[in-house]
Length: 240
Ligand code: ATP
Image (cartoon, rainbow, N blue to C red; front, top):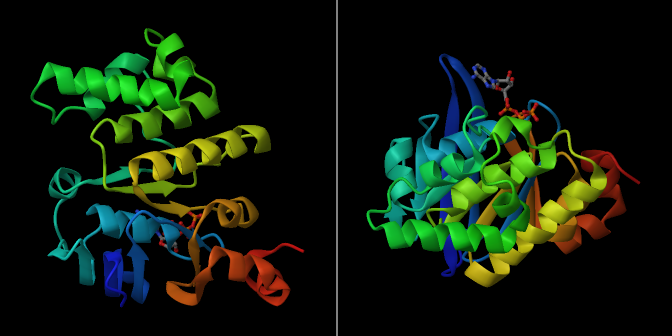
C-alpha cells in the first residue's frame, strides 16, 4: 500500500448475524481523495460504510492514519474523525435545522467552536441559514441531504462517509450536492468515501473508484480509467 494511504482496509469481512455480506475487501484511500464505491443493489456498499464507522462490527483490519480502528464503537469513530451520513439521511425531522446542526456539534466544549462550525456549514449550504428555525421535516429532499452533510461537518471530520446522497433527488440537485462535496474536499482536505448508484456522476467527482459485486471488489482504478473503459462501463455500471 502507498505511503500516502490515509485509510487502509485489509481483508474486511462483515455481515449481519450469521449472514456474511463482505467477503474480504482490501483497498486504500489516499489522504484528501474522493473515493467512489459503486455496484448494484445488495452488493454490500452500505454495509461497507457501516463497517467503517463502527455501526457493524467487522473482522480484518481498518487503519486510519496508521491507527487501528478495527471494531471500535461508533462514538469512538466519531471522536477519531469519521463521520457517516447514512442512506435516508438520518436527520431528526421534528427538530429544527439549527437543533440538528447543534446536535452534530455535540462534542465541542466551547460555544465559540459550535458557532464557528455553524458558520462553516452555512458557507457551504447558505439555504440552511435561511431555514434555521424550520423543522427539518419540512425541508425539500435536497435540503435535508444538505442538512445531513452539514450536521456531519459540524465536527470537522477527517473522513466523511456518504451513503447514496442522490437518493430521491433530481439530477440538478444531485449535481449541485456533488459540486459542494468536491468544494469541501478541496477546501478542507476532507477524505471522502461516497457510495452511489449514479456511477456516471460519482466518477465525474471522484479520484478513484471500486466496484463491488456480492461483497467483493471486482474492479478498482482511477475514476478516469474506469470511466474511459467502455467495456467496464457496460459490464459493471449499467451505462453506455
Ligand atoms: P443498496 O443500494 O440496495 O442499499 P448495498 O450495495 O448498499 O445495496 P447493503 O445494503 O450493504 O447493499 O446490503 C448487502 C446485503 O446485506 C443485502 O443482501 C441486504 O439484504 C443485507 N442487509 C443489509 N442490511 C441488513 C440488516 N440490517 N440486517 C440484515 N441484512 C442486511
